Length: 391
Image 1 (cartoon, rainbow, N blue to C red):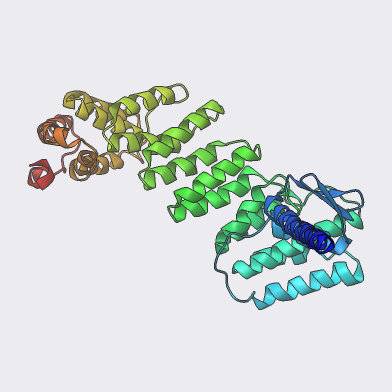
Image 2: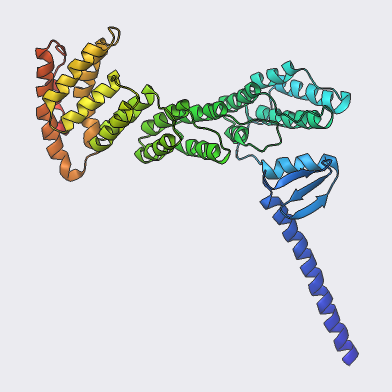
């Protein structure tokens, strides 16, 4: 009986060890797949082994690159077009034939043609597969360690934005990638422009995060697009956040950026922010544009200073070029017909009635002063008194 009992105990122990071993196998496999990243996956030596985290694995050369592609650069798009276009597929097959069979580098024109002909997500998928194969061939056969030139990398980003393959487009901004692509701020601008067209603040935030992680320097053009997206989506919190980041980075903001920023502030009725932005602008620009000048005039109206607002517009009329002077009448009409409704939407409920009464009184005073100096004669104030929001 003792022998039988000992045998049963031994069987249970061995069974537990088997289960534990299988469990550890599954856990290790899961760990490798879920924690591999561009910074953790490295090619070791002759590219016949891979280090993932703290684990070292030997594997055939042909297994290395597909594994990196799947784990480190998995696509994010849920839906894709079913088939690549015929031209792109033909170029793809020819280039793979060249590097894998003929062992020669295909003509540069083929790659450029493929980029230009991409029309859907599947085309972009083939493009990135070709880039990965070409980079591998350049390293192993031609001993070329440098990435593809910057112009080509920018065109790849442009193609991704053109067809909406943003999951691949973000990979263009990674400093460490298996495609031989060099990230640049110009490539990021293509993705930000896509975000602007689609009013996609989420994508804008993701791109800005990638710029920071990959140490890409911010530029004035970056601020122009970012501020525009924030204004179009009415996100004052984001524009405040990123304005601090651009200023801290020492970016010299453009006139168009200040136009967007100041107009956004006065549209919200935020005179405190308006004057702070004006002060910042005055450090690099002395003369007002049509937009910033009228933003300040609106700010003065909110502070119950209609005569000063009229005087500012008069100075603006004297400093603007002849080509831009007709815009003054247009801006006065927008100030009368559009701006009051916009600014009142952002007022607190308890303040809205008082602000409406002040605007209803002060805007005609400002317009009368402009008429006396020969400006805004065609502006009709009848619509202002009829607006229900100012009643």
